[in-house]
Image (cartoon, rainbow, N blue to C red):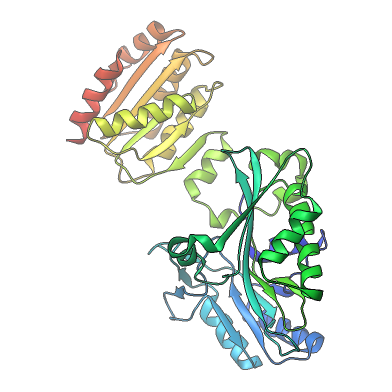
Length: 403
């Protein structure tokens, strides 16, 4: 589950991780009030307005309707109000959103961190995620933080450091100090970075994150170490331990069909192809998608109905697939182990009847528990559903459907 920057920062503060302070706003009026608060608290006319969407590259991205960047420094009340009006409700297009962009429903009005002081300001990069190959969390960091970190990783990978953390011992003190040393820090900044990294790792583990990225990780002119931006992804499988965090989910940032599928306990991921597929079991679903490509089609989705599928869940999956106008055919491939094939067949029949006229080919392959009963149900339904026994037969029917 992805979180917005303002949500992630509030969670980090609970683990004593210093962050750039700010206020989430939904209207220009709220943005004006936030600016007044920041000006009073920090004594500066400068503030930063940041669009809140689940995507990176906001600083370089632009709102399609107004041309304003997704992150902008402002220095007056009028400028805050004008920027808020130009960002809120607009579609922000970044390198990560693609041309479709994302609608901005909230902005973050935050304090300016680039104030003057006795030392040099510096931007770093730091992220924590799971290295599945090693079975350990890894801290990735670099002295070259900021908007061009992707270019740094591509052209100068030697500037990206990695520190692996053993799951049995957790992050050790010497590792936090090593990170601060490799970032070229000393004195007060060194001590602050060591504390920052330690607390950030505690947040990563304590919140059951699957990814936590701070970019830029900022050394201010007074040697404070601060998370100026934060991208946080929580492990969905661990939300049962964090009932309060589930409420932070922003459904407006997710694909509507995937949200609807979740309501029916269906594992659904939308793709860009022309053949809808409904399968039970993730492995069989992946194999089915491969078969669709080999037969000349492109999978339009990943849909695993699971082992407890019944007529109702199958009908729900059917309706979700049919919402995609690109779909030219639907392949239903069920191996009846736990799930009964006749239940799936009845779901197909019910969906067909309830949805009315369906003018695209439907190919059904049912094998396993009650497969014969399922085939009989489909054959006697009078519907234009093509049944297959072998996977090769299903592939041939898919090929004809998309040709």
